[in-house]
Length: 387
Ligand SMILES: Cc1ncc(COP(=O)(O)O)c(C=O)c1O
Image (cartoon, rainbow, N blue to C red; front, top):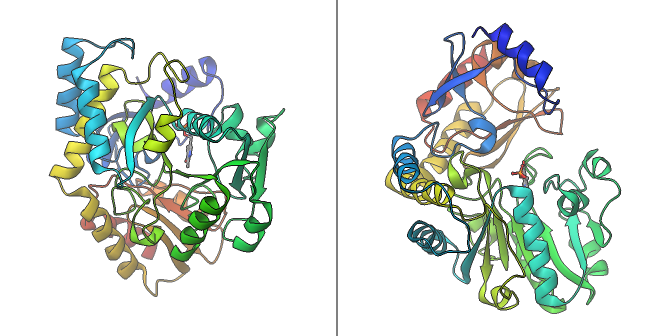
C-alpha cells in the first residue's frame, strides 16, 4: 500500500493517540527503518525508546520464532523453563539486593504493581512522586505523574499521591513521614526534558527513606536495561551507588515484544503472598523468550559499553556547535538543549530522514537510539544539525 492510503485508513479506523510522523514503517534493522515508500530512515528515537537491541535483532527474532513454534503462551498458573531462565537472567544483571522479578506487560502496569507492593510491604497508603516525572497512563500511575497535562487526563485521580519538587531535598524532608509507603521517581526525568540531579541527591533520598521506613522505587522504564551506560541506573555511579527497593522496567526489556517488570528486594517480596498479584499475560512464554534474548544480545554485542561510547562521541561532536547550549543525560538517553525551540531542528532532521524525539521542554530534543547505534550513525545526525 502507498503511504497516503495507509494514512487515510489508519486515521479512519484507529482512535487518535500520538501525533504521528508522516511515514509508515514497514521493516527495520539495527538503527534503521524502511518505510512503505521504500525510504530508509535513521531511527535515533529507537522505536519510542523500545528497540534497545536495534530493530529486529537477528538473535532476538530467532528466539521469538523458536518459542512461537513451541508454545506461544501459558500464564503463571504453570511453571515454564523459558520464564525460569528469563527471571534468573534478569536478576543476575540486577544490582545486588534485588533478588526477585515480577513480570507484567507495560511500564504503567509495572509502576502500578510497584506502588501496590510498597503499600503491602509497609501497610501505608501514600506515595510521593516528583514534579516533572512521568509514570504512565493507568489510574494510579497517572495520578503519580506530576508532569504538565497528564495528571488531568486521569481525573478523577487516585487519592494518596503527594508531589515533591525534583531535586529539592529540604522540601522532601518536610513531607516524608510514617504515612508514606514509597518515594517513586524517574532517576533521569526523560519526558520532562532529560532532567538530571546530582549523585548525592540519591544518597539523601535513600537516607530519608531509611529514616522513615519508606520504600524507594526507581522507575527505570526508560533508564533500565543498559540505556544509561550501565545495566540499570540503580547502583550506578550517577546514582552514587544507591540501590532502591524496587526497580520498574518495560520499553527495552523485550526489544519490542510488550513486557514490563519489577525487580524487588527480599523484604518487598516477603510481603507478597500467593494471589496478591497477578496478570493473565505477564510472564507469558513469548515475552519471556524476548527478555532472555534481549539481555543475551546486549551482553554479547557489548551494548552497555557502546551506550557510554556513543554518549562521549556525541558530546565531543556537539561541543561548541551553533545553537547547542548543553547535552543532558547519560548513555543512549540524551537531551540536546538548544537556544531556541527544537521543533525546527526535529523537522529538519526528519526531512533528512533522521528520526528524533521532542520532550515537554520545547528547547530539548531527545535521542533514545538503539544501544547498538554506531558513532558513524551519530555523525550523520551531527552533520545534518551542522548544515
Ligand atoms: C519513565 C516512564 N515510566 C512509565 C511509562 C509508561 O510506560 P508504558 O507506556 O509502557 O505504559 C513511560 C512511558 O513512556 C515512561 O517513560
